[in-house]
Image 1: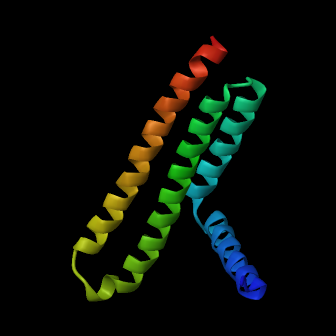
Image 2: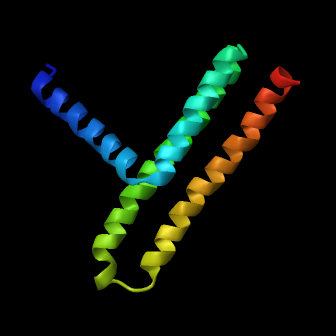
Image 3: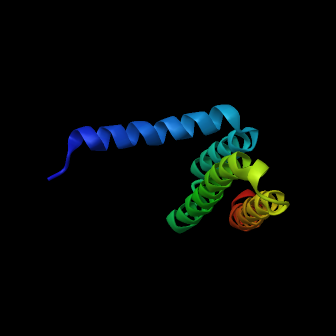
Length: 118
């Protein structure tokens, strides 16, 4: 049986995390803004369903990686005084993951939108 009270609390905590990230993380705000623009452009240009789904998946991957990156940054910041130089390397590696995903999303977006625009 589904416990509605626990489910509601779980959703509340998830939205609280998203709200905090939007408020505190500039990169996440930029990525959400770009995601909204991409979705609006896809709707206006009436892209094919498969192209729209690909765009949504790529957007989701970038946003999820940014959330994971933010969470790990907070963990590393807590541990930093007690561990060595790997703390900074861990943060850089995770930022690199977001960067790679963003670059692939941009390239895919260009390839998808190109025929609709030109």
